[in-house]
Length: 371
Ligand SMILES: [Fe+2]
Image 1: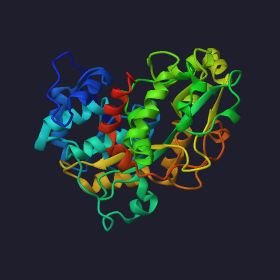
Image 2: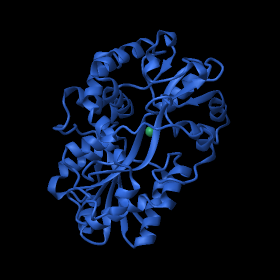
Image 3: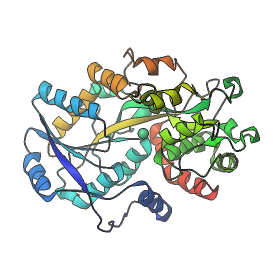
């Protein structure tokens, strides 16, 4: 059974974000709907339970299928999970404000940029290789923190989605080529305040250097079909509607539309194709969902066991089939729609490095006029 400690939205002022500079703070405020606060009764309960065979899990992922995974963990290990859900930024803020008294054991979130920020705020404790050799075997070194502060549990690529009636995929090649003036007025992408774009640009900084990436960003902004608005799904829908011809989106968004119960969404999905960039050189940008054991964990063994559980075959299959994410383990069967995208070459750039370029990327996009 999962004991869910639901977060509440609060209208109270935000606490000072010591970890973020001015520009980052702007993005944080724009990107997070409201500061999530744990109901006081829930907090007391979580503290009381932290020291026993229970796990206080702070999750910035909001998938119904994740709840089934937590149930399965409890069934397998007998360790009960108290789930605290919220936006990743609000949860990080919460853990920081709880300080040494935080009941948090594990933090799960999407995007390497967020894991890097949580790590820089000093939230994680290391899981050593001797404590969890399986984790180190399962997760490639580019998809985990070098000292075991966090580990990827699933992968996603940030790809080009194109309007099939407007674009010949033979004309697509790389992220770099999106800067070409042939795409003037054609590119749909969400704001620079979103971490997915910060991580993609973070990788480009790693590959091209800062000044080349900045001129790339300027040219991509010049190619925008409209001022950035909406999430990745909104970009795909606008692309299908011909508002632009190319959308930048994470891979799991399109299968959601393809498998939608709403025929209108399925129709939208039928109008677009997926293109994996940079297949002739470094491979497509790979981002992750990841998890780490928190410094305040009263039960680090159970916390480690939980992360190991996320990397078992059965759970990897659940990520791939229910969340349309790519697994970390080899040989896991995918959802048929995800499988239909085909095999592709993945970039092996370090998630810790491009995640760590987060602030540089945001400032750079800001200078380039990427709002
Ligand atoms: Fe997403």
